Length: 249
Ligand code: PEP
Image (cartoon, rainbow, N blue to C red; front, side, top):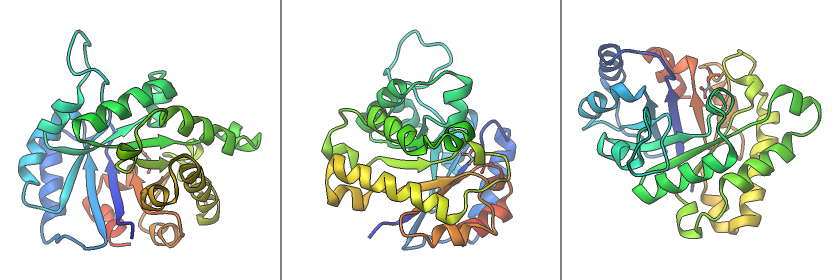
């Protein structure tokens, strides 16, 4: 009942010209699949150009961040309606690189998620524990707090449009993927949390992505897990051939 979703997060990579070249290569001969959705998350600068290149394709656009206000004196920020106008369908929120590098809190994540939903974007809310937290056996308490505070007071009608991405911090950009069993254990925990919070139907319909050193060799075994509904791919999404193999897991 859940469609898979594979998102390529380019982080701060690719000029507009490089992004357009990639999008043309990826979309050539790419047809919509009934069981999965695909999106790429380029830097803000490339969103507008890519929305034109991808207009008649089955590849959607995702932004890497959003501000919670509609407009105002917020230098360097971009609002949810601006992202929608630029052609985005999704937006990443609370990526660990923003939590760590820009001090983003669970409260910020919550405000951003609400702003995205209000504008009609699907927020991809990223959660995950550090290596120290995993070794201290705090994985579940960390994820519980991130979800509880990040999803606080989001209306039941809206929550069904939110996507959760489990990204263990120790697996991001390290080449150290969580084993399918380790990832499934946390995905199952997230699904149970969502069930307690929003009921069985919403929890069963929520797409939960895994991210952390996904590559063409491990994508299939991760996607074979019961509660892994999709993938958030960093480094391996920068090359169209490698990303295509992951999409075709
Ligand atoms: C990410 O950026 O969300 C990510 C998971 O990166 P990587 O695939 O490179 O670990």
